Image (cartoon, rainbow, N blue to C red; front, side):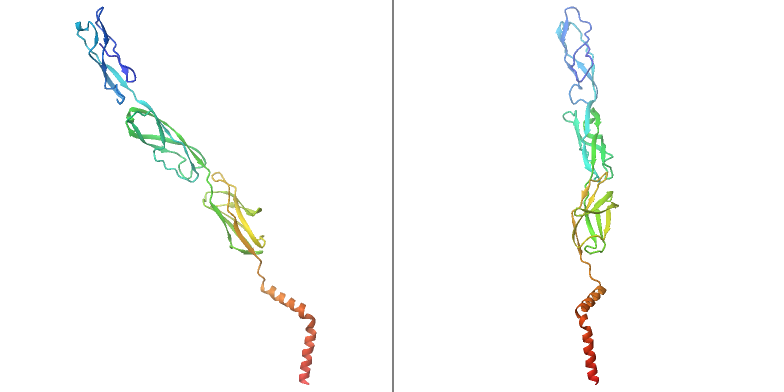
Length: 288
């Protein structure tokens, strides 16, 4: 009797029965194979028949011929998990960002290498493939591994910035320079300086700094903000209000002298000839 070749996923059964006479027959032939159990590794294993049962078999000298069971690699799918990050951040893969389908009990996937062009801080806004490969674990030699890519999405970043002035406070009619400073020098675009709801002017953001100078502020407190239009990698944003105080302009010395002289003439001018006349008479009397 010859055991028919089979795969591990099918039942064993006996096949060719050569030499039986009419009325004699075989009913059951137990078959065994080291490749029959689930843990059997990839390869070929003998199917061993023995101890045939049936009618009239005692009258035969039975020869058993082995068959073959072939254990093929099982498909195992490893999929990289998708994720996202903010522009300017760096992604470091731990090797555990994956899901597995098709793993048998007792086997394991412990780590998988991950690579993505979007992982670096300089990666622009957009989507990038996360490419898995080189799985490490237990029993993985018995699998045909299929790697499925994930997606890494890079989103715009928010900027952190503020406004300062030089000088910190100014006098009426004097120029003051407002500086908007961004925490990321990669930010580009236009900055609009506002005095409350009034547009003061615009400036170009270069190396994280935008500068605007004006001498048109009136006396009083001014609540200065800077509005950023945003660019391909950064969201638009407005700074908190910066309070700049403009004081009355100081009076120059010559203006003060002229003011005193004017006041003197206004109040004492009409009496000046009389005063001079009295002084002259007193002088004459003293000499006479």
